[in-house]
Length: 495
Image 1 (tube, one colour):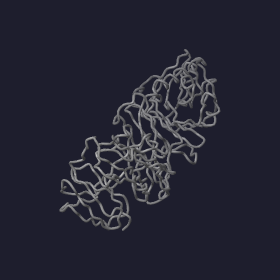
Image 2 (cartoon, helix red, strand yellow):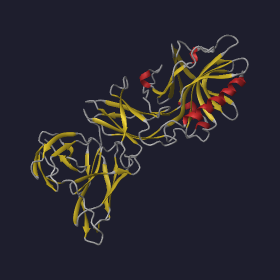
Image 3 (spheres, one colour):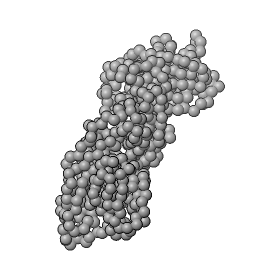
Image 4 (cartoon, helix red, strand yellow):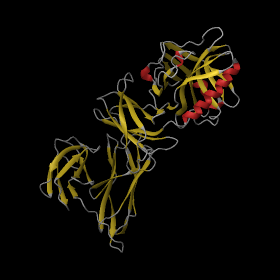
């Protein structure tokens, strides 16, 4: 009988290896500050092993403001802007007070890459609200099977706490028998994974296994693909109820194994989180009855945001290169953004002569610190003013105003044309400000928030227009002419 389960070790590890690398990879998950009654913005970068273009994934953000008792979800869409080629963005509302939890899941149509709720209190048996689905399996593929309909898996879910990893399997039946009688067949149910950064990841797999056959009993196992061996390395807790099988193992039992090192790892995920159900009989044959798809499962990655608590971000090394140049020179504007709260900058721009130009990140490690930059040209001869302006969704920070100079030279000037140019004075302002326009006269001016949503549309009846914004709350806004991609920054200081 032991040879049956040696064969099982090879099969489980091979299936893990074959599927897990097709799961999406999540990194640089980041959120804006949690402002009472405001909107929290979440960005996440996503690829998989074949690096499909942006838009080939379905990403969702799951959020909870009732201590993870219930979860709401919102879709995340591809940003599709320069510097954000692999980035997806979602939004959800912040409550008036308290704490907000969230996690992100990516689906490439076959496999998941998912973060998870955190089981802070080590609740056992672990409830569904503290688990993340890692696979959904179609029903009926093993129904009416002579080996037993309880082998028809329907899902696999994973979770974690400070001391445990949890797994939940469901089947298309009402129980989880381990034996069909004195002479078998015997039934083996496993949730398998490995540490994706371990040097032995192509050899060793790990499973929480529910079985009761001679020397192979319930437990946490290390399976060796090449030696066809298995080693029981720890106890597990098991609870079955109807079609649910819940297991948990101690993280310390895994961390004690040399083949599982390094732990904690840098990437934060276990590869191959999947369910497996099979039979074994006296003829020394092991049959793979049903498995779920593998997933990348992330632990220690469940942000907890306290509404209203925030440290302002900082800008350093703000500069333009060169500081002067002839007509047609391409100027490079860059600044380094850092945030003690690891918050995402929802506003990241340089304002040049009143025109707002979005900056792109260098490495997507927004809290890093990370450098945001852009190139621009076509400036007229003379001095030009610029300033970097960022917001983490709660605090607005700006660099010291600076200038650069364009001199007459042999390079032909590249004119910016086709849209109105704005001059806003004063800016920042308290209640009213005057917008002066040169160039083509727009029909309307739109006042937009930092997400680009129009708040107010104003007819542009003259080249000089007074804006009365005393009813607007303090914050960052943009002014946009109809049919123009150019924006002007408006900073309202108070009512």
